[in-house]
Image (cartoon, rainbow, N blue to C red):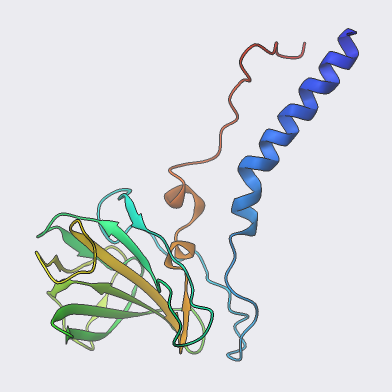
Length: 194
């Protein structure tokens, strides 16, 4: 095989790898436009994860096919009991109390359209009250030792706009969601072009 043909094959393989790595990020969008006029888009307004630096995701978002159908309307993040839970963005606490025996905190996020996006965190022992204004990264409570639906201690993090559940991971900018900017690594055994 000639040098030019080998270089062409190498570039085709490299392009394929780039598409494979970056395409899922480009396609990770919110649902199609909704009735609110906001287009159903989720702005990347989060400045922090709710718990930890980059917690392990125990279970991802799986939207229901119908409003009352089965699904997972949020993400479960591994977190030890007593760990601080933070508001991912600035907003106003719309609820802090118990639902079905679990502590729940909901925060309406500032500057996210009408109706505003609302994040929920459970099971959380609230340190805030309904009506409190919170800054991005402010502690809103602590992980309760029991009461969640995970097999390990966790926080269920949800996101809604009115009655529509959305993927809360979309609130995170790519550098938080993916641990930093994408980097291309060399393909083993393939020489770099001159």
